[in-house]
Image (cartoon, rainbow, N blue to C red; front, side, top):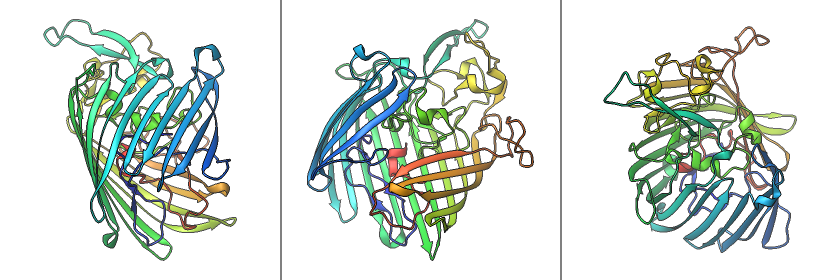
Length: 450
């Protein structure tokens, strides 16, 4: 499926000494989750998946050409719970040299856009473009109660409305410019982007956003160390889908993945970690959605072989500072304008409280979250990767995924800072990828993960 607008980032898929590479022009990520069957110059990818709205979904992705000479692609998929509704997914795109144009309707959300990548100098690329995204049908998304509390009457009750989490209503029309560079000598790659929301020609959201990311890697022998630093700032008016998850890639990036983007999708049913955002893999349960953050993640490990399969074992530590986080979770902080927005029904104290009922002030949100643990990744047959991480410590147990006791793995999972929890990542790489791997995707592609 299509990678988001203006994706120029670092691809840290190999632990070999070769430096990270910049992905110059983004086209549909058709190798991420599907196997290709096709004749020369044409790739055909079957698309089976599931979501709660459509039931079983089947379709096909067809692509002709390659990144070097240019390509065209078409995707059609049909949900079978109500087949008379028409296709669940319809997508088309064209890439010629540095120019890319695309249209996409996928599971209740629509978007289209264009971008152009300009080589400024050796290893420097500037990409500019425009896009529109809009929520058409919210039945595919998890919905929570938002609250509107009168600022001039603190004692007045807060009105509640049930709305989709992580997608705002109305059209988001935006211009974006992104600068990326790499330094193979220093094994360093970085990118910086500015996004401007325009309330023109039907656009609803007026905002300014800035993002930056740098990735550094060193490898020697069978060992490697990777460090990722990222920061993002955006205004209050920014739509939810253009904000950043603490626990991984943002809503627009997840929209690209049919196995993750909608309620009830296969990867939505497990503790799945899609790298990006503030990169805190232990906080998937409450899905903190951020307007601003500064984060650092580090991972070091060594290669190993299991039953002849190349793999990588590692330890990691991650932290993120969230400016202006509310001191307590209450009705006044569960609004689309919140600097930190939580999927609050999944909080322990809020469970089983339907109808918008809420215990105000029952949970404190620190302005710094962190986690640490161990993990292992292996390259499976057919080019697939499996990465399983175990965050054994989370700085805020009430927000993190529930954990079993370190010495009571058969016991009950509950809120705790120190314990055993897990996160799974999946990926795909062409058969020609380097044999030596380092948890592919752990610091995946630049701003795409945002």
